[in-house]
Amino acid sequence: MDIERAQEIFHSNEGATVVYNERVVFIKDIDPQSGMATITSDKEEMVVPIKDLYEFPYA
Image (cartoon, rainbow, N blue to C red; front, side, top):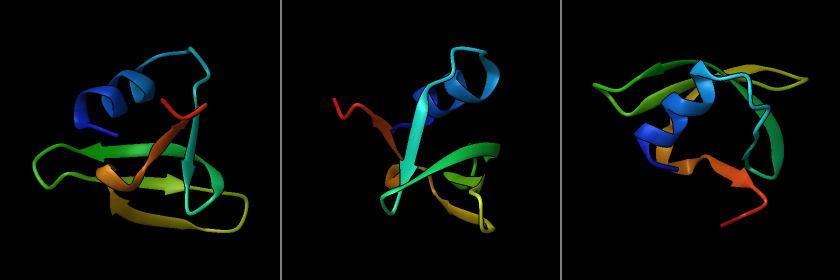
């Protein structure tokens, strides 16, 4: 995913499905300077590269 799309999802109410390592996650915060996002899943919170996030269905 690119930074622009991650920011669109983060700031919108569109309900996009974001996937990281085959798990659905929610974007909690974005740092465009570093290209990292804080995400949460049902099990944990982590900071990951935005480029490793995917929107489902995959484009």
